[in-house]
Image (tube, rainbow, N blue to C red):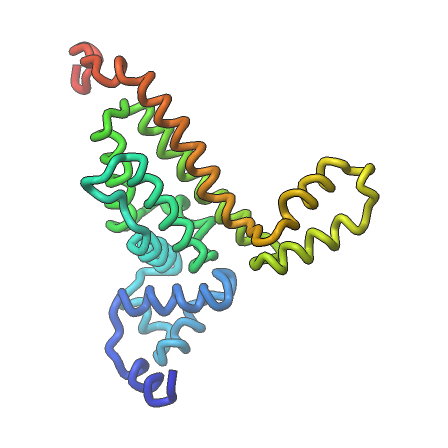
Length: 239
């Protein structure tokens, strides 16, 4: 960004959206631990006290930042099968969390979720319910998919490598420290899988995702009788 562009950005009027986007950008660059109202004010060219006209406090700022992240995650697409919709949604979530790694530990931590967060979760649940999942299986499926997606994103963010070359280098460095017969299965995995040309850890995500979706498809077939069974009047709310 040029000096003139930065000056124009600083002169632009403050808004809640602008504050949240600037906070997310700072967290992207330096991590969530480095974010403070003072540093955010400096990035926006205003006094920190001015920020409180748009966010109530630091907790409200975090709520808004998480909601901003959810607004970037593609919701399940209407008109597609539930498996394709859930697959697309999980891939989108992983991509977004890859851009905003500070958000991985925060996305489900907010006690006051924003409208984008609520709309996204409602769309996920609605996709599964419209596909015939019972309420109970919908809860299981949503929890399983989120746990896998967030967990993979967390593990991926903590790895000491990103590219195939870096992966191969770290792997070779590790296996050089022991004889193959000492840890034979690790040596086998390294030689026959990880050190093969083109391997990247990120490719494991969609393989695992498809295994989960296939298992949920089988569970949904088994669940159909219960999903279609009417709820007795005595068990309905208000009875």
